[in-house]
Amino acid sequence: MKRNVKSKWITLLVTAALTVMAGCGDNTASGGNGANASETPAASAESSSLSAIKEKGKIIIATGNYYPFEYLDPQTQKLVGYDIDLGNKIGEKLGVEVEWKEMQFTALIPSVQNGQVDMGIAAMYITDERKAAVDMSDVYMETGMTLVKRAGDDSIQGVEDLAGKVVGVKSGATSEAAAKELKAKGTDLEIKAYKDTTDYLMDLQLGRVDAAFNDYLNQMGYNKQHADAGLEIVGKPFTNAGLGLAVQKGNTVLLEAANEVIKEMEESGEAAALYEKWLK
Image 1 (tube, rainbow, N blue to C red):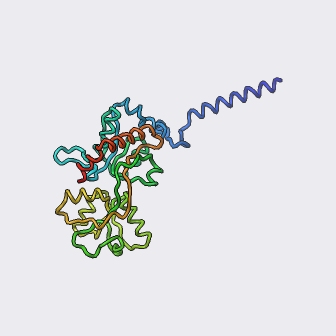
Image 2: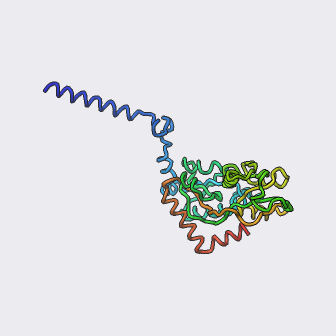
Image 3: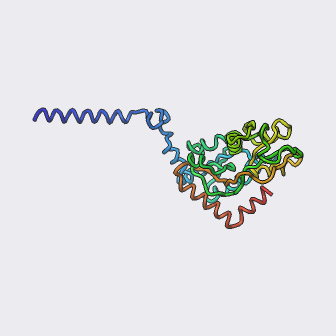
């Protein structure tokens, strides 16, 4: 009997010790590092929840620099464009202010993933790869990838003529993926990746690259803004895609709110009006 009592006390003491040790862990297994233990995915998701956004009175949206979707107005030095109007409409729907965070395109998805921002809007193509990393909205605009060349260059009539050519693309974007896919299928082209679309379009104009891949809508806007650049679109888009905005995985309430705005804008004719304003 005494042995059994003693064994019970030993078991209780060991259990208590293990509990204390578990409470003092460094969260290594869950990705924490002690000092940043609060910055877990669950905590990040909570900070971007709809209730948290309304409590802080603002929604933080990441965007890039991609005319005419998002760019700095030279007169006001403020961000303007189709995506900016869309994001502001979402903020209006939620009854909060919008804080815009301009960044490199390649940083957009990671910023949404880790909760640094609540949403990302930057003329992003909805792809399986992006949907694996974040939750993406319904399509708010249809578009596609197009081939761009210097006007008068008769050597390029389509993507089949790109063998031996240097093609400018945007690093980490769909244009780079399209060029890599074409190369993988046997077209011997050289891919030159840039941080910004405007940089490789300028190099195309200057003859430093032979052609470029760009979003059809963006190129339409660029040609309108830079009529003297001497660039032209070759035929029709060779891919079909839809643009969508991104929120953190599992943030269904915020995603549903964004989708409601997209639907309302389509039904009211506001989406068509914005298309005329920014893309015609």
